[in-house]
Length: 78
Figure 1 (cartoon, one colour):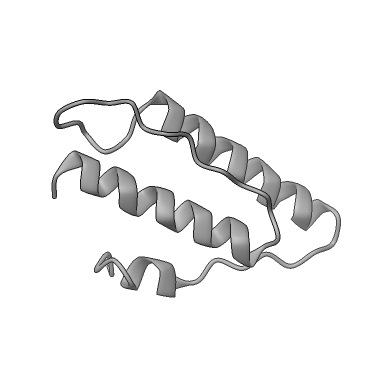
Figure 2 (spheres, helix red, strand yellow):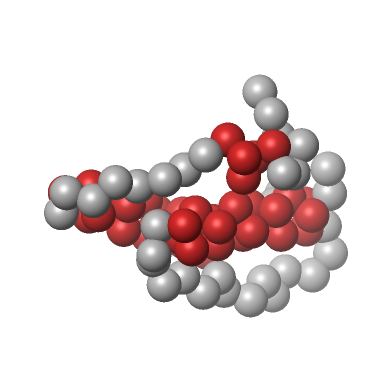
């Protein structure tokens, strides 16, 4: 899978998880040119931020939702 495709898929998954859980999330605009690995320091920072938001929701007593459906949509089943 091409890196930019992977990047777009992962951003979509993060967006869907944020939306389902009522978290305001706006992914950064990728400025990478050419092929890449599909992740970068900014992507990792966004993932860490989203993870922290989910942990905060749990700590506040909310349920958080992450389903396999997000992964299956992109053919990423285990």
